[in-house]
Length: 320
Image (cartoon, rainbow, N blue to C red; front, side, top):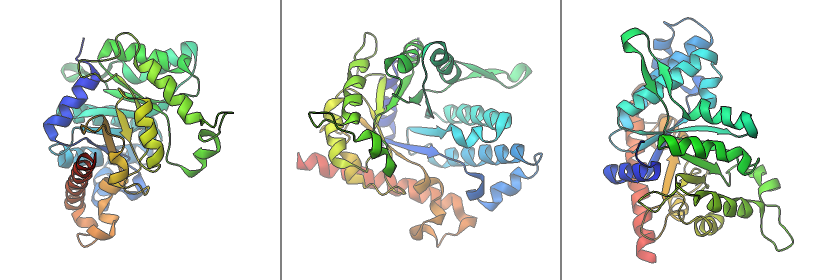
């Protein structure tokens, strides 16, 4: 059996000295012109878009691999391209592993019974890619799941993850404004829905066989940086879950907000940044580089993001 997911994740964070995950969200319309020109050699339509997604993501991996411990693949960006897109998805995951990166798949799946088991198998178990002598196995290290079905929808993912040394991140709080219509509903005691979800996640995270040598569980949670007071509460409610923290950058969260998701010792969180890094040349601070130098813009953005996060964590440690 592979080493426990949380232990592997924290080892990777320590190696790169950065609790930072780069999100790979390849939207064809936003990709650099050079990438789209390379992909135009493929058959048109969805196959061309899939080729562009693969080329772009692999180029981003080449840039960021020495600076960060993991990448997060947004599966929707590949699924929209049909079968060729899913083939590109697995090739990108394989490429990221070759670059010594932990791979999180952002699928947000869930259901009940045999359907949940099928989803867990589809997204966590091994897949063969390549042909002939080049055929080999690829899988991902962790997935995101939706808690709406309760433990019935999450347990199949936990069971498969235990066997494969993988991880599961339960979506507890999200960044989109209308989420408060449901997530902030209060019970008679004033406790909100996402607080109840967090309490259940903590119970699930402490099942037999879920906690690694590091003291962290293979079951983590998605908690955004955009509601810092809630983030502080959620860190307390799920003490031994790794928190995957979106919302910094394009969605308005600050690095100081994200740092709240970490324990006082500086561990327990993984900040994820997607558009603010992979489309960096569109941002005012890097627009002088221009689209033609998009690779330089991405490298500058990942280095600045890494430095800003380190500074925020250091300031938080000094204040406690």
